[in-house]
Length: 350
Picture (cartoon, helix red, strand yellow):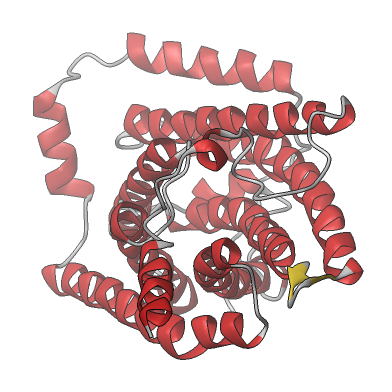
């Protein structure tokens, strides 16, 4: 449904700041808020939760049920669609073990990012072009538009499922611990931003992050499919190379350029201009800053991988989340490989 627009500020949309302005204004606002907080502590936190947090038990129950639903849907899709497809295409055993994970994530993130794109550019919401507008009409307990509530339910339940999946379903990688922390931080941000009615900025955060995941999983799928059936498929190889390049560029542009200058600027500086006593200011900004640091951490991986390609240390594009040879040298199969490898052993007995 078409969304109702948010009223613009008195001077209209303000230009996006520079990194220097972000640091100067954001840090200055945070220091001023800290100095002006005469009653900070657990007492203020408890009152803030009681006065401003609006999250009904049925909503949490629905979130948990949907998380279980994602897990069941993934299991069904893996056994009935992804694994038969890998077998039909005659993928290499290691690639066939990892393909279902990437296919599942690719389909979800493609749908989630497409829906976020629709909300930001197919409706009257001005949040992308005017990020400070996310706080213009903020009120405690304000109604969450149905189209945004749907996005929150889908994303929150998926990240709840992803915490379980990272521990028990996905292949374990060098950065899996950081990935687990990322999922926990994201889930806390989704639930708390919904409860405190910061859902407008939440949609912007999801839009700026999901696009990189779409390109990451697209690249990995083409890596897995380029060597199948005992031959090399040039089309998938080219698609993997282009996907890797697009992924690297979009990661910097969306997560390290737009995210700080649009989201962090709005939450650290503009929020206090619109709502001087906005609740849990430091809590939300600390989580968003932690998210930024994790984005920077993964970008260093990307830069290191690009350096290896340019210096000839890596001649062929492989799994773009595995930038070293630690896993290749380890004889221990990943969790994703064990069912497939056990099945191959059984087949050999016959």
